[in-house]
Length: 213
Ligand code: SF4
Image 1 (cartoon, rainbow, N blue to C red):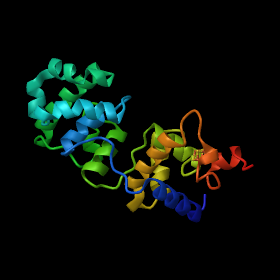
Image 2 (cartoon, protein in one colour):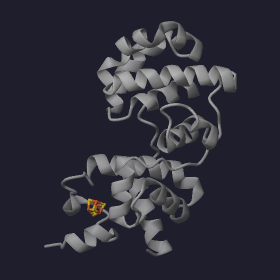
Image 3 (cartoon, rainbow, N blue to C red):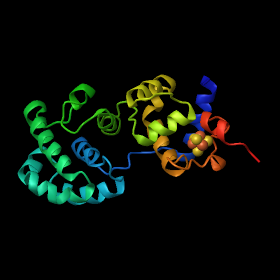
């Protein structure tokens, strides 16, 4: 894909979705970390409902440890995979206090030592809580960028590296949000709406599968 095509694709996505921000509600890096752990296989809307209650009284590692695993589980049980998430959050709180003075680290490698935190979660925290340019590759970003041709990767890491190469660094974080919204609203998993998509003349999948009448 040419640089000009990439510029056109990014400009089109920007015109569609503008200045996007994280769909998870948070006030501190710790709140975003917990919300992102909770968001695995759960909608942002559901997570925001759960955290709006949880964070009223439990929004620090110390307070969550006081709540305890059983208490936490009761509060997050509607998020799915709640047992695993509760265990990981408790272990993460212990580790934050023992290793990082209770502060969420700003380094990818350090973030990924926290239980329940993979590369995607670390990238979400870095870009949204600390303004570090990053592209978190979730299921939407993976699918949409491979279809468009912004990436051609079989793994999340491959796609992340290709996107970082193809997209200017100052647009990484925004491009992440644009690709998510495009995946939710137009380029859906089962039925991509190529007929209505403004990218169909630029997109590898769209050019192959959609012909204008
Ligand atoms: S043209 Fe189709 S495949 Fe390409 S981004 Fe648009 S909806 Fe997705």
